[in-house]
Image 1 (tube, rainbow, N blue to C red):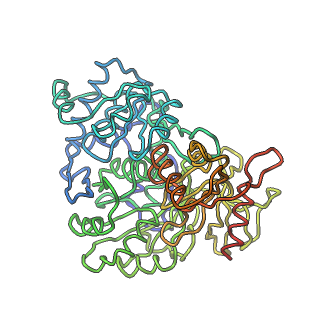
Image 2: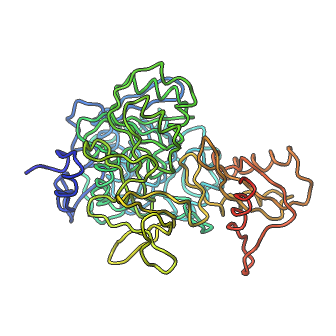
Image 3: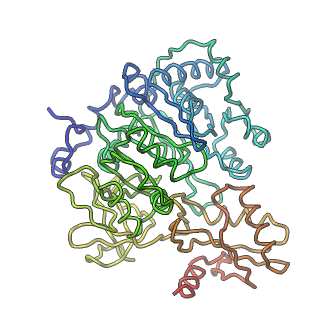
Length: 515
């Protein structure tokens, strides 16, 4: 009987898909399953590379499945010697590298919980997450280590000396975990809580992830797949790393400050055939003016995080010969709308989020919870566990069943594919001694989709120097990418009856001003 990976058409996806058939793609079962085994160990005999790390400095690093299998086994044995127990958390703050894959897969082999952290986090960004998940260890590089010593957990520098120490340990470790055991904590800033929310994934999450892999990114055995998004976030880790590795597919990862031409050159050099990226990555490729210098073999491409503009969609199709396929979801609910890249019988509709995943139900509801008519904007909801779950996004569906994004329904800001919390940004701004109040919203930007704009009530006059102080403070305390690119000094901020900042009014005023 054909496996799901043998089918490429939209019609077959609708007719043949079942949750049971997903399990046919794995060694484990509903009782015992381990992510490291499924992604790495069972493929150790393969001859194709596991990971090709594209570095911003022009270098690259190629790792085989056997390389990662043995490194992660040694790391798992080292964790055991260090007293790290199954269920303990291990934070990993590294760029894609030999050390990153050894740490993440070694942690999950041990039965501990890997917690990827973005390398551009400042001390506040790290502290929020460390306080929440309380890791036993924090694995990072020599550059980051000095600023993390006060965070709480023991800091381990994964340098050459550390790998020399690992050589004392056996390159074998039998991974044996319950399928329901927790494997990875994935943090998201897509929340209005003061603390970021950890989405807790079990080992069996790798099975349900295959729905997005097969129909959102179009992964099939034999692909050479690249995702330039950081594996500290959901798209870069789950869709960009774990899913393709679980299918034995070669993965391209990007390390360092993003450079569009560096990526374009890598697409040619390493003969990648499938790419999934943020819409901003494609915009930056277009704006680089370098796309016509290289030749490509791209057969499937997808994007996520935000809608793609028409000029960039034109560039993608003109450059790669394939349409840009949207993949929509959130860290909390997973991927629910896809454009089935690689399916010859699925027309990709420009500007749409695609259609529901096989077996999925998505509807647009009005304020009373009733389905909206085609073309009418409401809140998008997904049917899960016998009830409708809100996505917190607005949208509409057309008569053909394609969905279209209608903007955020909460206070999340999405910029260049990064999901950011207005509350966290405001909190960082308020650490400036001259700031009394701050409100943050997302405003339209041609390159990034949205950028952060901060409205600041202050004790001193607002000028360029003050603006730079605020921006630098947020960069240093929270994260390099979350600073407000626009700052407006105001006399007061609109408030809700409860005394909270009314960001909806700020957005309404800003939209009226732009209009």
